[in-house]
Structures are given as C-alpha cells and as structure tokens.
Length: 67
Image (cartoon, rainbow, N blue to C red; front, side, top):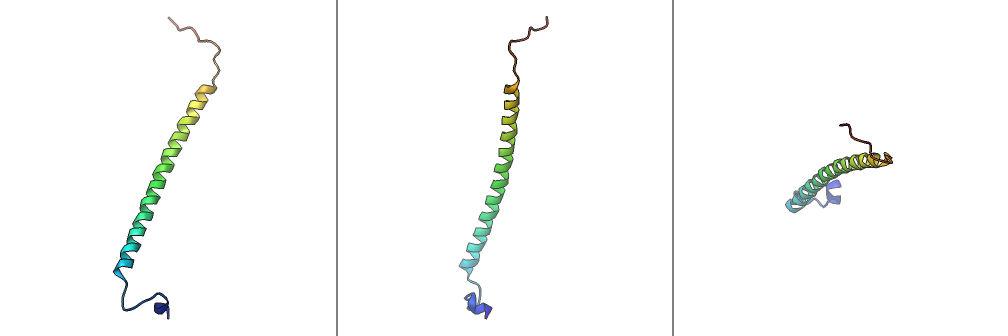
C-alpha cells in the first residue's frame, strides 16, 4: 500500500534521487552560510558597540600631554 502511495514502480527514480541529493546539499550550503553570516554579524555588532562606547566618553577639552 505504501509503495503504491509513493508511486513505487519497480525501483527508485534516479532523477528523483539526484534531485533529493542536490537539495540536501543546497540545504547544507545554506546552513553553513547562515552560520558564517551570523558570526560576521556578531563581530560587526561587537565592533559597533565598542565604537559607540568610545563616542559616549565626553571629553570637553583635550588634556595636555606630559613632556
């Protein structure tokens, strides 16, 4: 019964198997790209918060340098 529901006629269709492998590889590629982009985003967010911290320091006038 299950074979009839899946359209089983004597074996798996090689085109279907190839398409499924291609799609699985595409999903893996997208997942790895997502991890890379999330790491890059975290790095950029940390750099942006560091820059914002430096800009929040209020120095009304430059301090004299020690000579």
